[in-house]
Every structure is written in structure tokens, then in C-alpha cells.
Length: 594
Image (cartoon, rainbow, N blue to C red; front, side, top):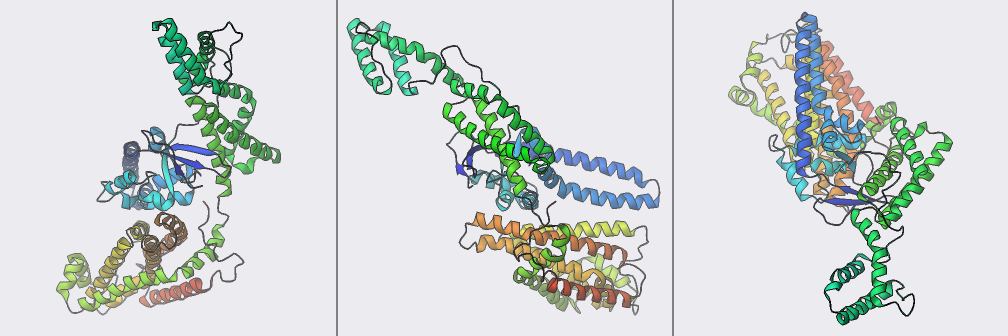
């Protein structure tokens, strides 16, 4: 179902051939319309965040408990607004955000299928790259202008495109019939223009010239239609005059955009189209599973009939209104049919137990590369900072050094970041979770830059952590920071390495696409590595809860070291053995369907 460019016009178009050999034409959204939709969405986002902030501000004034609760909820709410607004609206709204709905745009896959949840995740994670440099959006705009499907970078990874959405509308029961005789034009447009030109100029011609021109026109039109005179007394001028009288209404109807045959077809198919539209509306609301056996059979028959009617409407030269409406409803049936077929059948429990660890084992090479590029700079920086306080200060800034200098020496149970009361723990935990998940998102998206963005984030975080460890070692309080980090560190740092492996896997599509084109490799590997990214998010939620509630607790350091060691052992067992005895094929590593 690879799209092929439609004929050139003012707007860029693509034509998609479905498995039923039906051509669906789409008008691609241009940069201006997409920028307008984005501006509306950003306005909604800003207003929403302001309202959330105002609401939680007043909740926080009710007391310290409500202050911590409102702050926690506000952090999660802002995170989900920032990362989930586009993702969820497009995934659950048929590829439309409020901005796209207002402008009349929709996101679909390049094969014409409706936008999947996985596709929405991919295109919106890469949005951060499209907005570069800064938040200017230059990268995405240039890509839209240069790409034949008007795809930004996120669309290329997700295999999607943004098209103009003319809306649903009701199927037309009739197309207005113009005055004149019903029937298909006998002459082509060029032949009728020849005839009409003669009729317009004949009065200005001398009789003998008019007669000779009429004979020439009659001879030119003869092969296309039987133009024999009714009897020997009928002149060529009379035959042409009669033909013009019959053909003029038909071609006028064509110029007005209302084919007589198409209008007749609309009348004949009134009941079929009404039944089909009702089934499509029901399927949109409840899915194909809500159909009875009879409705399922009926839908299949009506969909095939609608596909045939679409081709007939094109052949008959139907009006733009009728043709567009028939195509939209044929496309709606196609989307409904293939949305049901494309849903993943992997349960959440099976994915957690088998799918995710199997994916980690399958892609262990890029994950190990990410670990090397993360822990390597960490160890190198720690070694360089050891005994060099000034270097530590330049890498970390005065804040971390001041904290290290103020830490109580010879007391491994001393708090790493000061006392965190029970009321503040939820706020601290939510900050950690959202920040770390955002880092993994950026790590993955950075892979689109041929892995350079992923490399930068891994090395940067390795240097920062190594410098922090070195700063505490210089103050002889290394055990304090290790006691804090040990509880959650294996889960958290492991998740970053897995996300880095996913980013490198995405980048390999540009550097080593294999026998596929780079666009095909991007789409395939982007879908593959979504499972890894979903798994890291789950890991970081667990790590954030531990870091927010257990790591800063007043428990002795030995308890925290023991907890961290047990966590490391469980991770080795989980990623090494979970899912190995599952009967599911090794290739089934997709994330669970929403």
C-alpha cells in the first residue's frame, strides 16, 4: 500500500492504493496550515497549564499536606500536558488534536490506515527534534517542504503524514440534475469544443464556406458517433445543429461538476449508502466487535460496494461534492476495517513478564554500547576529579560542592540531601519520576540525529554523575552519596542505558539501513524500539518511588545497600531469564495495546 504521487496541482497530493485496489486521494497539509494548528494547540496548552497552576495554588493554601499534594499533582499534570497532549489527542481522536480539528487536518499512516497508538507515540517523541533549534521548529518545517509526503522528522519515524480532512458529512442521496436529456456525453471534451466552436462562428461565414467547414467537422466527429443524416435532405449543418442541441446540456453538466451518470448512481444507491453509513458510525463508536454476525457480513458487502461506487464516481466524472463524500466514506470503512486488524493482542502482564525482557536481550548490543558510553565517562570523570576540587567545582558548580562540604564526616548514615519529611516525599518522588522519564525520552529522540543526540546525553549524564561522586570522595563522604544512590541506582541507571540502546538502534537506521531505504528502516526500527522505551518508563516509575520514599529515609545505610544489592540481583534474573520459556515467538516484542 505504498502511496504514489497523484497528479500535480496547487496542493501536494498522494494517492494510496488499498488492498481492495481502491485509490484513496489525500491532499497533504502544508507548512502554513500545520503551523496554524500547532499555534492553536499551544494556546490550549498554555491556557490549560495556567489553569492547572492556579487551581493547585489555591489547593496548596489549605495546609502543608494539601500543599505537598497539590505540588505533586501539579508536577504530574504538567508532565502529562507537555508530553501527553499531542500523543493522547491524536491516538484517541482519530489523528486530530483540537488545533488540527479546527484547521481541518488529520494524521494518518502513509498506507492510508488510521493513526495507531504506537504511531502517535513515535511521531510525538521525535517532536522535540523537529522543534530545533530551540523551539523555532525550523528542522521540522524544512523537512516538510523537502519531503514528497510533507513529513516532518517524527512522521518519517512513525510512518505517518498529515492530510486535509474535509470532515464526515452525510452521503449524498442525489446530485442535482441539470436541465436536458439524461445520458452520457457522446463526444469528448476536445470534440465538443470543436463542435461548439463551429456553432459559435457559423453565422459569420459565407454559405459555401460554412458548408465546407461543416463537412470537415462532421468528418472529424464521425468516428466517435454515428452522425449519418436522418435522410438525404438533412444537411451537414443540420446534423451538427441537432448534435449540439443534444450534447450541450450534457457537457454543461460536466462543466458544472455534476455528471448525469453519477447523479443517477447516487439515486440508485441511496438505501445502500444509508445502511453503510449507519454501520460505519456504529463501528466508530463501539468497534467492529460490537457487530452481530449478520452486521459483519453486511458491512463487508457494503464496503466492497462503496469501493466499487468510488471507482464508478471517478469514471462518470462525479461532482467534487459527491466524489469527495464517497471517497471519505470509503476511507472511513477502510480505516475501521484495518484499525481492528492492526490492534496488538499482547496483554500488559505478558509484555511485562516476557515481551520487555526479551526485547532487552534481543538488542543487548546497542544497550551495552550505551552502557559503555555512560559508565565510561562516569569513571573517567571520577578519576580526573579525585584530588582536584577546582575541577569538580567547574564541572558541578558550587551547589553540589557546598552540599558535599556540609555533609557530616565519619557518618555513613548522614542524609545526602538533608532531611526530607514524609509530607515532602511525594513531591520529591514525582519530580524525580517526571525528570528521569523526560531524560529517557530525549535520549531516544536524540537517536534520530544519527545517534549523536543519544551519545551527547549519555556522556553528559555520565560526566555529571562522575563529578558528583568525585566531589564527595574529595570530602571523604563518598559512602553517604553511595548509600543514597544504591537503593534505586541500578533500576534508574539501567533504564537510561536501555533508552540509550533504543536511541542508537534508531540512529542505526540512518547509518546502516541495510537493504531497505532509510525511511523504511526508520519506520521499522522506530516501531521495534517503542517496547524498550515503554519498559524504561515503567522502570523509572519504580525507581522514582524508591528514590522518593526509601532512599532519603532514616533507615541505616546497610539496609539501603542490601536493598540495592537485592534489586541488582533481581534485575539480572529478570532480564536474563524472564520469558525464555514462553510459547510466544521471539519476534513478539511489541508493547501492549492501549
